[in-house]
Image (cartoon, rainbow, N blue to C red):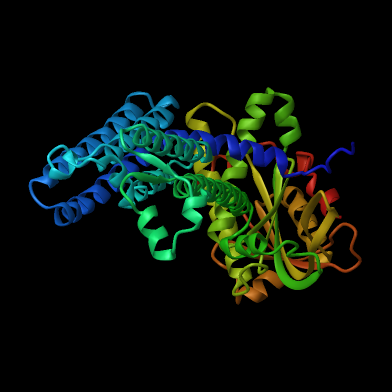
Length: 479
């Protein structure tokens, strides 16, 4: 026997299914309340109808029964509230409901003169009362449990069959045998009168009613099963969308969620690329434990991601202690201005973070940033089982190089002249440095620098920036 193909989504789906089951169990009280309210509303509508059909005082009996059913369904609601994790109320109460309905539909109304009629039990089967079973059966579909619906169908079939058998057991009641020779010799009119005689119970109609109850229960169970699957699929899609939204702005997340392979075809675009890195991170991590190291990364990565998203950028990836983001791929307007605003926001947030760290007696953290604008190629890289959106091009490499140059230049951020030209000028805090030689490039690049915020404790932290070795993994990754 061949093994099934590996499904990479199966572990995730199993986890979501478990969470879905817990959520459905937690929603048991709400679902039972909905079923109780639906049943109550249905019986309130049926009450006046029975009064119109049966008259007064016969209707008193039916009103009492309806109130009994309403009380019974609210008792089930109370049981679900009392034992929210128990499953027995979902099965015990429907069974009792159908059993009580079978008795009500088989036994004549004691307040009616019809109850004294010789063939009253069989006449009770002539009014289409089996429809009331479908009413209760339909409310079970609110349980979101196919098993409960099937159980309800079985209970309804048994209750109606027991009611039929009890009717047949009454004096003067017989089963109609349409295959008997005497019946075959009757005319159509005579056969009809014979079949509708009060002393007969038609076996064919009985079987037909029971089969229809079972079929409708099976169909409803499949509807419930399909609803559960749809709910699971929606939960998976929402989970995937939420995961995408952690890395991408809303527009691109929607595009990736709606398309199976949104970046299969490479796309060229103009974009501003941003690299960030923690200065001296390797030396810092060497002096601190893994728990403190992870806590610092989460703190810094968190504020970087928030500022990237605030500027409608795309967070491409975290690279060790660094990060890469792009502006202009998801939202085309003013990518340079938004990227510069993002840098400003990151540095202000880092200043606030370092003030909080200083208050706790912790060492300030320096963050370096590099920006460049140029053509990039966006596409999927990897294998079918694991794809990743990649942004490639010389602009990526140059942005990474500029970020690494902040150390010898003693600044917090460097941007190329292409970024400032696209932004229509340099914002406050930036100054033109002039041409600089970039490692790995033949021609010099005109750059702009920005110092850390004056109120950032890291701005006064020695030793000099050019004495701290670069530990960024961004350069090798981008190259």
